[in-house]
Length: 257
Image (cartoon, rainbow, N blue to C red; front, side):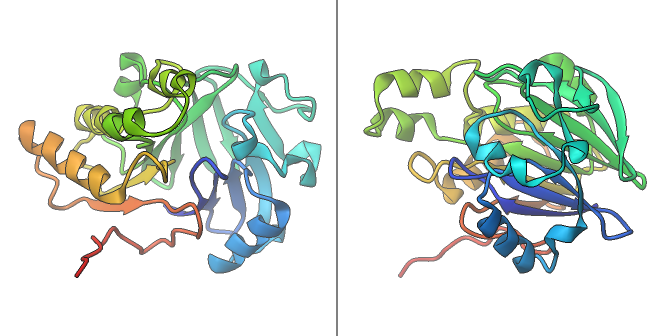
């Protein structure tokens, strides 16, 4: 499945799925219109290729340039009460086809109504897209079983978060069941759902202040070793805040010295 994470993090989120007609299904549009166009150019794509936009939730870092799109292109959960919604009001566990992608709408646990993730089927491959949730319910995990691709939030390291200068109310919000997945939460969830088909994992929404790429990877391998899961064949990617993650890019540890 061809995808580009155009940006991921608290300053803006957007992912482009590209079908075989070179049409884009955009998941979230949390960048300024100017910055979105820059990221599309990085991916050798164009704004004109975007034919549909689906919003996970209405926090600003996921929908800031939504009004740049025609209402007929926009999909969001009915509980989001988005004023731009015309016909494409989504419901929990609804199946919908958009541009050849078959999506199952998954309810997430976040501090704003109508937050959703997706299972996406396209040409015999399946992707789970999970971000901005405090936990992944066991019922959702069953549906996520044995995907080819997992694009999943790995937001923070709890120790770094608690040692940060953020106010306590914000720390409590992030750590709550309506907050964000920690590295451990993410990797334990992955260990429960990965299967023989799994070939690629992309970690989303990393906090620049309370997480590092090295901690994400370290936690992943620690959890998988503890559960005796062979992950030697799986490609790992970490989405970036400041640039597009291209299709063939994989995680490479930064060696200091």
